[in-house]
Length: 291
Image 1 (cartoon, rainbow, N blue to C red):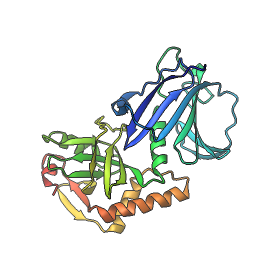
Image 2 (tube, helix red, strand yellow):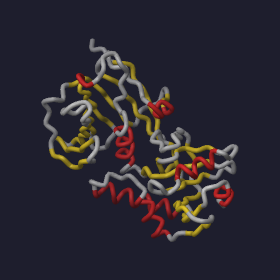
Image 3 (tube, one colour):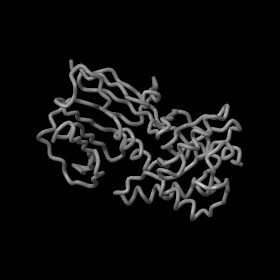
Image 4 (cartoon, rainbow, N blue to C red):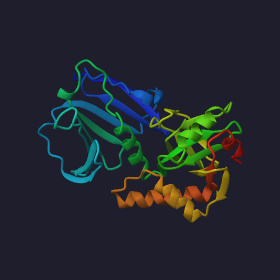
């Protein structure tokens, strides 16, 4: 009988990903902040099967997208195939991940000669874990956004959005000083519609402050960050808010249908949650200023 390695479950934004391996000598071990998201005894929403392969002689189908970094996306026989390369390792892909059309099942091939013998492997090592979650969400009323998420002692749940340099890490560190506050992430948050509300979830994909929590909160207010000479708050129109929210989101930009779906979801978010522009001065008074 074919031996397989023990499985591992991780849960991000109420999405359970189950990972097993075809080869008994593959020890699956999530790395870094993802280890905080390991769970037990859950039915997986996404099933991942990993295996050793030789990827030196593989055709890839039609190229759909190139990240100009570690990965490219191909279409092959109805599957979405992510191809991962690194100049440090060599000319061949070190990993490919083939997903079905609904992104709830994947096979991951690992180029064996690029991996150290008898060492643990994380088949979903970043950025594949993030790609898995964002594509699974793309047609299921959810999206990932560039944001800091805070659960305040008052039980309010605040989302602070902005591109790099807007102040997400700064605002996260200010809230860390507040007794009873919980920071879900200082860089990446997932939004989902569940139980007639908009929920925000921490993710493993942190920023400079390295804050990553598996907790969640029912979102109550959204703030778009800008640095300022003093603390000021400006209500935003729904049109302005959805435009800014989309600019801070991570949909599959190469798929028009999923873009339309994510836009519809974000429009529902801004119609449900009050949105503001927050100009803030980076000291404790910025936290006290939040209504």
